Length: 174
Image (tube, rainbow, N blue to C red; front, side, top):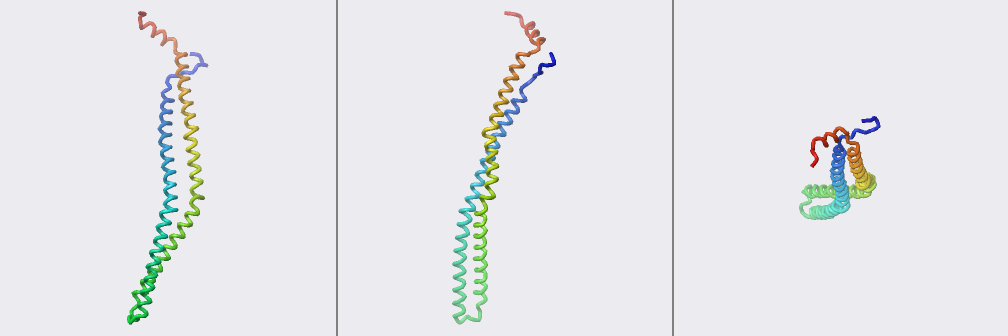
């Protein structure tokens, strides 16, 4: 064999790489789809479910506060003026509950305002990976297939003469 010839013994490694890339491509696409779905679910949860939940809680707690205030007023006006501690505690608890719901609602509104600014840069990175998986990786896989074919053709053309001669001497002509 001369020094300017390559010694190609197997192209199985290229096939193994190609197979691994195809498996990676499928798994990575599923992972990207899952991430995009999770992003959408989080956005919907924040913008709709949580906002609706805490708006409802605020209304419910405000009604409870109004009722506690009414009961306190009634107790003050009634003959039970001396024992209004229970109603005062109920008003305090109801006010705290309303304040908690208002704070939760403020936080949700703040998160909604900031969500896109935080999530969009990450989503763009994921989209860049998606483009790589959809456009660049298939080109690489195609290149590996073509390289394997080229190397197989090269190996057939440059088959060592001793192997070819041995093959012809072993089989008698028919």
